[in-house]
Image (cartoon, rainbow, N blue to C red):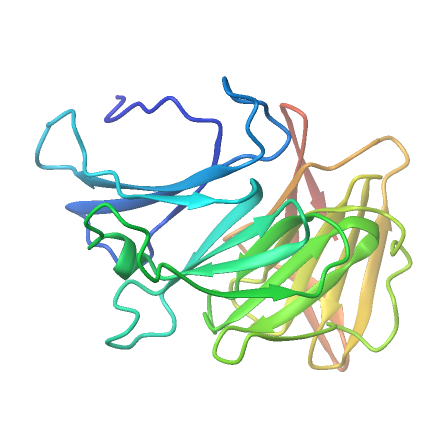
Amino acid sequence: MIIRKYERNAAVAWCPICDECLGILAAGSMAGIKDMNFSSGGSLDFFELDYQNQKENDVIPSVKMDEKLHKVAWSKEPQSEKFPLGIVVGAMDSGVLNFWNPGVAMEMDGTDGNVLYSSAEKHSRPVKALDFNPIQPSLLASGGIRGEVFIWDINTIQPYAPATQRSPSDEDDITGIGWNKKIRHILASCTSKGSAVLWDLKAKKVVLNVKDPSTNSYSSLAWSPRDQQCYGQQVTITITLLFIYGTFEMYIVL
């Protein structure tokens, strides 16, 4: 059953704080897709969906952006009076990460106010992947062109590399990135050339690099909620990764 339908070329993220009766969806104009006006700028729209009310006209605060983005992520951190709905991060086409305060956006009266509260420049090229750590939501992983992967603490907006050495796939573009759901220091990424990398942030190294010769490119990555497996220092855990290639799904068990 379709609850709502909105005509947008957008990257989206759900608010992680809302209850089962009310949802808020952030939708940012997607880079690489021309709009009717051929504009280089875009907007970050917030849709408030009341599932118990079938009204067609949802509240839509909109924030203007100077450029379009590739990915949106939403964290419930930092939990404070200043950030009642956490923060929204946009992976911009220029390589910049923009940090917005959705709590301000939902109370806007037609002006952008102080919704954009910080920007960070570390990536040298477009950022294509974002993911907040589900166990420690103040940690954000970002992936970009030519193997650039950074970890951010959103309390300080300071990045660092996940390992002391570079990945064997450091010349490939990162297309997907994801934290393990049970082990906070395990991170996975996939690339445009069909490789997958497993990072151990505690050991500060790459613990696994897999290349599938039959696959040209991975477009996304997700962890299985079932038993997971990975080979780390002094411990063996089980991991299943789901990679998406085009419209086909393929499980790779490591």
